[in-house]
Length: 590
Image 1 (tube, one colour):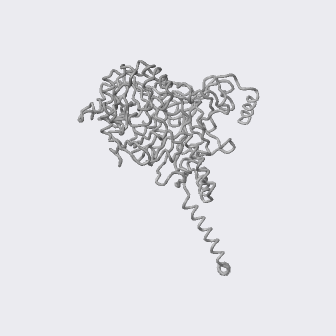
Image 2 (cartoon, rainbow, N blue to C red):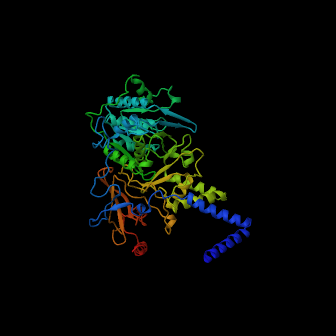
Image 3 (cartoon, rainbow, N blue to C red):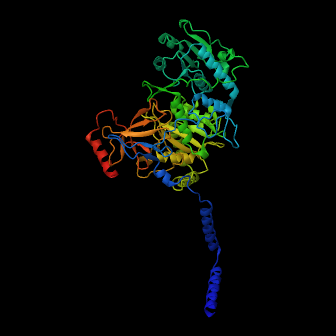
């Protein structure tokens, strides 16, 4: 008892002494300490994804062939299982447990007008199709009217005996309507890159053997085409509302009378107001004809013509849909804006994926030319944006310049970067895009041999903090519908010790597999996998194609260019000085 009494007496004296020395400074220190501990506990968040899932982002095969690396696949498409080739389309009346069809382009538009099929709060919801005019005018197109347009345009093209239809238009509803019209009426669509030199347009028409052109006045060299390409049979002008009163059917003097000229509006007026509401029946139809695109590496170079089957495009769409986690996939609540040309297969496939997901889609003909995100999104507030690396770099440069003039902005940006890179959590505050922006995802791509600026991990992380949106950075290739590889949805990492923060293009998607084949100095060995990048799968035209670039798989099984990417691996090996650089790098890797 005496011991307990002594203990209580000492405890009483300690507490009395503590509070006897209490002063305002003590209150401040205790308040700060308690506040800091409370904030750390209340604000603590689990990472968006477990770090181990980022440490090995793709699977490699257990064995490899001589002169090749192991075959790399997505973790969601393991070896021994077929690659993702379709959309699993269920026909009306089919059992829920039955396997669906891969689908084709026609099924995408059928899904657009049918709406969400899965049970839930959004069942039956459909997206909207919008056209952005200027900075303040947005026009909504009714899905029923667009279905009629698809039927009328398709019937007109078929009645003219068309086999290959060239589409020379900027990003627009008319471009997509013509593409779907060709799919429903078994015509080959030829998507030409817009705003090209006259000789390039004539060359692309000759190589594609197009017999009908759908284009806009003022951008198509009609006289030169008629004189130099006699195979052209018809021209369909897509005129704006302010020019409809003009006589667009008149053929310029001296151009000859072999070309039939009409307008988009005249074709639509040919149909009855009560017809064209029903799409052609599904039964008994063949797979749609191919879609031809042109890949231009650099301005002034001859474009590479690539012919994709409908199956290639559908596999590309499926890969893009499954590349986004289920809880974040595109849906009716999203507004998708392609701020890159639809003539690029990466942008086209993503737009088709947005349509199939019943997301709203906005078309702005000026967006691909915009060099700033704030300019590209004028008039609408998209949640998902396809942007060019150049536009993202300019946005990053301007945002960095703004940080220099504000201590508060620099502090906030530093805290956001810490949350991204150390905690693995996306910040909720955006500091760059205008008020009201709802942007949550940006998709962009590298085009090999096209001198597109590369985006380092550090730049991408800055942009995530500036925009409050996740960014997926992809590697594309001429013969691949969609992407070769693409960074993960939750990959916010920054790599220290690498030039400019490092960069990579992520793992393969579920619709493709990658193998690196030995070439020149780039060989698979103890230092890792290196070589010429080959991609194969259902999204590849011809089944397999080279990316025409030398690549390497990093320790996390993501793809990047080799250090010597700038040296053409089709030419003689680099000089001894460069070989020494590569040998030193191999030694460090070992």
